[in-house]
Length: 188
Image (cartoon, rainbow, N blue to C red; front, side):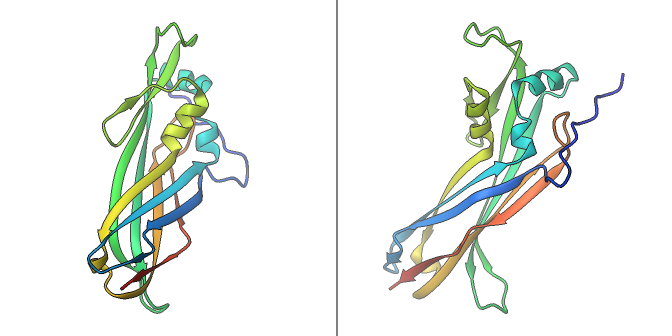
């Protein structure tokens, strides 16, 4: 018994790109004893998101390919001069899983459906394919840092985001990276 080859991606297109990567800070002007809250958001778009649909979940389930594991990493760093590398302030690694299962839910008229297991060990049951895609591929992470870790003065911070996944019937193995635009923080 041979496994089905993964679907071909359209020529010239990557399996996924990270889009709408943003970073926000609260407050942007802080005292040395304050805590700073950062929020990093991004979306994974492209073939992997487009192929994460019920018809292909069913094909994967029939081939004993029972889910998609997405490994994410967000690195919050402080930019220094152009000659020096940025210094990392915080790194966050987490995993989300889309798990395919045989359903008998009367609200879902399909044979195979997906649940989403988040990094918080919560299992979510999406009602639509779009909701499942959003749960798996739209990411928002929050960080807290003491202002004293940055020190007094003007600082420029950015986040580098990374997504990685393995080969499945509906996708090849791949990864995507992106950077957020820098934000300025003033510590007094």
